[in-house]
Image (tube, rainbow, N blue to C red; front, side, top):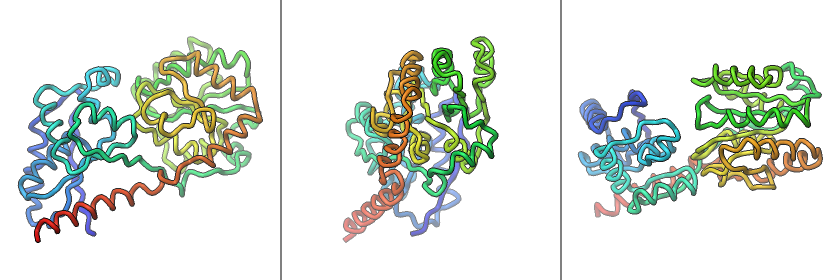
Length: 340
């Protein structure tokens, strides 16, 4: 079928507006009133879900909402504080609940996350459809050739972490874990890829802890280059304080990397503890250090986990668009049955 996408300007993090969804809806209705709509699909609760609600009322059409995490957690004071995002005020909370109640389906990207949404709005009709990764880009490649291409010595043991340089990604904890790892493994190198507001702070920490020669800090790169860096590494680390899903985990596993991740929503669903990686508590540099040393000290285990990373990556993480299309078809059929 035909798909029509509408984009809107995001508001600054410190601004919430319960009126913004109505403004978006008015623009779409005014400029696209001749569109033949079957299903409306919003990719945030607010503002997109609020706009979808208005359009659905206007045309008496069903709508669905996919929530990816950051939009929903503005509803939860403890997590919005943790993520340093502006939590919704009373009017926005009321609208968010209405969107979740009225949506034909609310798509969540992980089971744990779905539980959080259900606690906030038990009336929501929730369906879990995980995010996906690009299997045409992320797959095992020749480490020797790639390291030579990237200028990384073959003798180095490489830990890699990918994610925006913001507090909730927890990079500070792997940096603080590094001195303990270096005591046993002087050949270690940590690569941080992401870019963001804490880049200068990370560099300063590296200077204070004498880690400069052990850490490479890089800005965001495209997927093609990122696939090379995964394949140059020996293991992947995701020390997030809160991680709704974690596509980077899928990308790393698809490249054959064992992972060390924190026990948050996404990793708990993706990582099989002791099989394709290790799960550790949040905000715990000691646990990160011990996990890394455990894997680095046993070459056979590292190799086994690398093989199991490839064996255990679930096919459901590559075919998620088909599940969404199935939902579209189901909703359209239901709407047609109501007509007759």
